[in-house]
View 1 (spheres, rainbow, N blue to C red):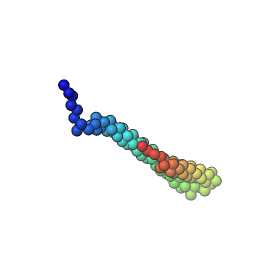
View 2: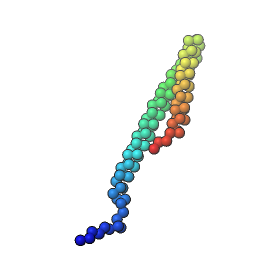
View 3: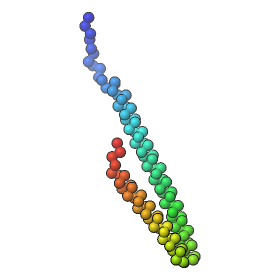
View 4: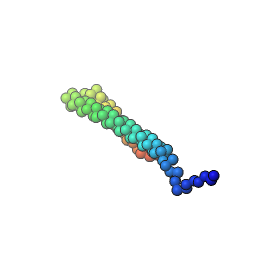
Length: 101
């Protein structure tokens, strides 16, 4: 008895689930990366806003009592804010070139 093989069926249905799973995993990893980046950005923004609030308060104190110590405190807060803002800017710049596959 001869065995007949139907050549009209393609092999793609057998490999399709593997491809779907791979795409689903890559999609979920990309989604996680995006979510993590958004959360990190939100925390940085919140921290910078807190620093700005402290700078404004210190600026008011400096306006009321213009002493060297108040000026020094104000200067340190501004320096810290600028350092963190510029540092985050460089993080974003270097992160833009990553291959996120």
